[in-house]
Image 1 (cartoon, one colour):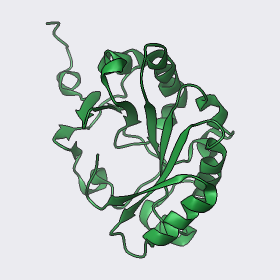
Image 2 (cartoon, one colour):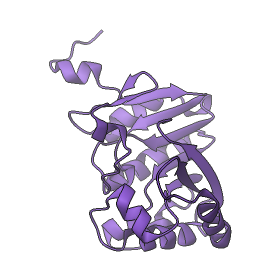
Image 3 (cartoon, one colour):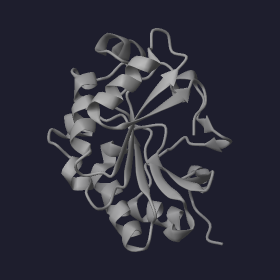
Image 4 (tube, helix red, strand yellow):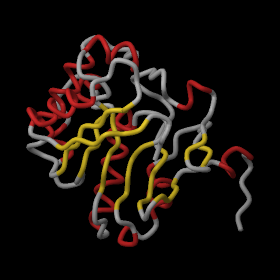
Length: 209
């Protein structure tokens, strides 16, 4: 086995498996500073995997971490950061694994990619991204900003616009909200998803993965 010079790299988790799905730990950088995110509570552990990254994995490392994509129910771009900050890289990985038979390729996202990159990025996902799980997390801007603490103004409206536009290019779009956060109205969040014509999933506070 090849030795690596960097001790951190030797222990770095790029890919991990939960429930038959292969998750890729893309980056720890994020557009949000969610008060309920494990890393802001000084833990990087998700289901027994330490997701702390000293450096973002390369495209080649992510592809290697997937292995044979056919074996997975889904390959999911995630991490304790925002994967679409590395949009070009994850789409390159997605195209590669789709050509090799990946059944489902999903991005777990805050829905702010278009806001961050300054253009509508949803058409770029066509044909290589099968599903988006978008963290809505609150029914209105005030509650959203209280819990998610976005770095960019207009984030709540931007994620709704992203979800609306993504429907045309990505077969399965789902909004999620965390039940248990003060002031978050799960029924109202579900109604927003219904109005947008996308799916909805309730998540439970402190249950990640």
